[in-house]
Length: 406
Image (cartoon, rainbow, N blue to C red; front, side, top):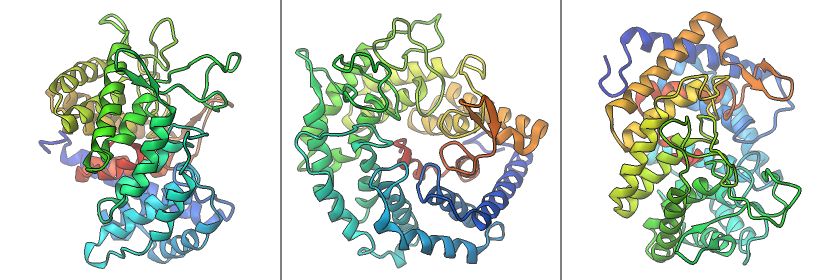
């Protein structure tokens, strides 16, 4: 029995077997699909990330020649990419830096220097004119900057990110700080009145994600004071908008403007990643009150099941394997037996689903067609499920910084 993850030896064998099957499926998909885009969240880069991690666990599960061929293709086409995290250069370059750092003795410090400079120039606006969240917007460059900063000085890149977020923030008289969705944002819920402020509460598209994007910059001396102001003001604002009660499933809705808080349980939206972000901020800024509030929110979220959490598939974004991983991470940041038990619950749930339905249990739910479909991608499909399962075995969640969770 693993003390950290409460996973039995039999469960480890089951999980290993599923990872092997997923590696075969993703590899076959890469061999036969020449139209695949290169992005992290749904394309080639995310699938290569999974195969890389699967190879680290068991080299026999991955065709090294295929991996090398596709990795070379990814690198060759970098200059043709858009810039954002989801499908563009920010996500692909994060993956390349992740691979680069895997062997510290062979690390190439010059590999992505051109990308560093490109982003510094491309993001240098005041005020920032575009999306501010992480999938398509400014916050999505923070994972790359944070990952690169482990081996190189990224103060220039983080400086333009911080400047852009300062320029788009709403500053309240009581010291609170938040970010309203830009008027033309594709992520606005209210498109009838685009002049109206709309404060999103999701990690993927809202204020929690911006807080998480800022956290690594607290370690940069030249930026620490400015970043601390933003993070403190935003955390205080976020906690002031905790509107749920003990009798409700969720403490936070999808946006502040909702009359009653209702959100799914997942990475993209929901209490558990809000709790994770608050706890990380509390540790970084030595604010125990944030950590304790985060613990309360997380334990409340741990009570939810598939029905109250609106769980309909397996993926990292809002699925049951994603929840096993997220509760694993939260229990590392704020250890608590109830959070460890929640992680175990979702591990058991995942394995039961796979025993009953096989690969079909890991299909992604398509909200448009209302059907479950094969998805090989990182955020919604097999590649992300595989990465999550690997972390359950090796207890390494460092790669989740690309999703603002580490």
